[in-house]
Structures are given as structure tokens and as C-alpha cells.
Amino acid sequence: MANTKSAKKAARQALRRTEINKSRRTRMRTVVRKAEEASVATDQKAALAALVAAQSEMMKAAQKGIVHKNTVARKISRLARRIKAIGA
Image (cartoon, one colour):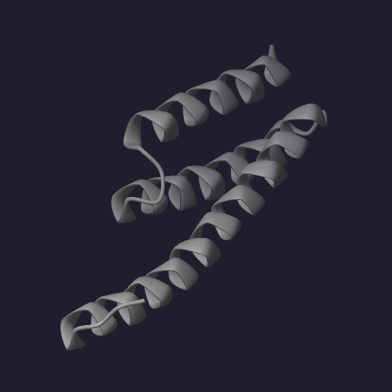
């Protein structure tokens, strides 16, 4: 348990950041899952729209430090490849 005033404040801040980060991570995972589900379907327009939404949310998460930027780049690349394959 924190003893000093500054340590107590840091603990409170960490709890707040954890809640915010958790909600951002959940939101990102939701849009990624929707994009993956759309990539399985045959409608490329809907899949592209889902990809754009997922890409935006993932880049925001990377900027906020929720996930590493290289992880986001890899996931976006793989999703885009799958969606591009629908049209081919």
C-alpha cells in the first residue's frame, strides 16, 4: 500500500488510466473482430468499411500506447490482405 501522498496520488492515477485503457482496448478489439467477420463474408464494400473503422481505432490505440505500433501495422496489413482477397 502507498504511504506517501505522492504515491497515493500515483495509485489513484494508475487506476483511472487502467479503466480508460481497458475501454479503449475493448473498443479496438470489437472493431477488429467486426472487420475480421466482414472479411469472411463476400461483401467487399462492407468489409472495406469495417477495415477503415478498425484501422482508425487501432491507430488511435497505438498512439495512446495501448498496443505497440508495429503490432497494429501487422494486424492492419493482414486484415487488408484478407479483404483484398475477397475481390480477387
